[in-house]
Image (cartoon, rainbow, N blue to C red; front, side, top):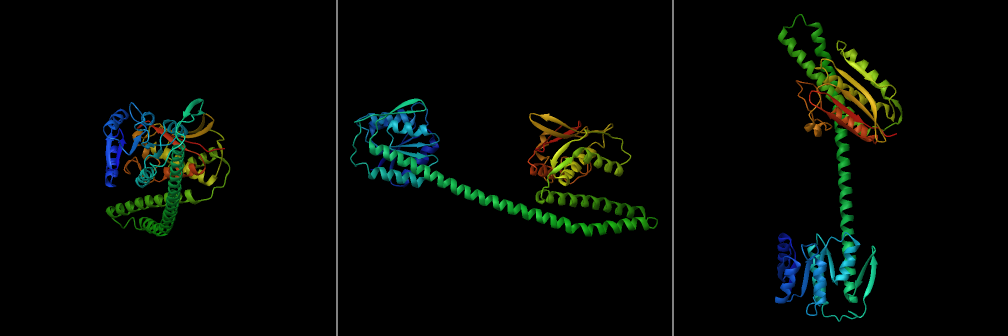
Length: 409
């Protein structure tokens, strides 16, 4: 009977290995550690020993050394299961007299082929077993190797085969990853094209609807009853929200596709202009604006305008319920980086919801509290990252929020 001893401290791995061997016509015994394995040898001598290296107490190298030092058992081929992450594994394997390395997680077919190989060659005469001890120094430590020539050759060949196998797996994984990346890029392109097309095509009919309803409200206000006028105003409000969503979707699609034209851009002047536009739309608000002078970056001016429109727009919107609203745009130095920030003392956000902040269509407030589409910050993040920068935020519910971003020089 082809009896194989498996030395494995993990019950799950031991059962898996035992099942594999028995399914392929071997009789399999299991020892949970090196000490039990040596005791097991006295009761029944196996044709092959398969041992894990990392075990409590006596490890696989020490077990192999004990086996090869015993005249009664030294002819038993020993296969060591290893991760082979360190060249020292090979040195220790040679020093202990191991016959083969199998990398974990192992390929079952490959493990069976190595067992068959060792069984087929177990009767080949070995020469030069102890005639000469080879001393090598590795990483400042001396090792004595007295394994037989064929044993050394078998071990090194198994290491080479394992390396080739691992490389083939990496090549296959790389090819699969490249294919997945290409599929993802294609899907993103299709999604952005779809968003752009749909948003663009929706604009015209929506503008027509808005135009006619506003015309009706202007010309027929004295004829229509209050309930009808209320309905029409609700349609106008919803249509404007839809128009805002369309504009945000278009900006989101453009932010990933538009070519970047880098030039010196004054964010302070840009922010000042945006604030003036907000004041024209909402001229009754009393709000303190503090903009640091001459915040200069090398960036695409159109895309940076989209960034500031969103960040300033959010600050303006989320301070509407604040009695003394303040918005501050400035810079600070963090390490070697120049960091630009937009700070407000508005509604803020709970840090537990931070993960939603820059996701498309993720909103932290209900429309009844603060209207919005949930696309703006996702667009901002994409633009900043396309410039090679990064964006983050901090906030506290009811105490405002600060958005930070960097633009590399």
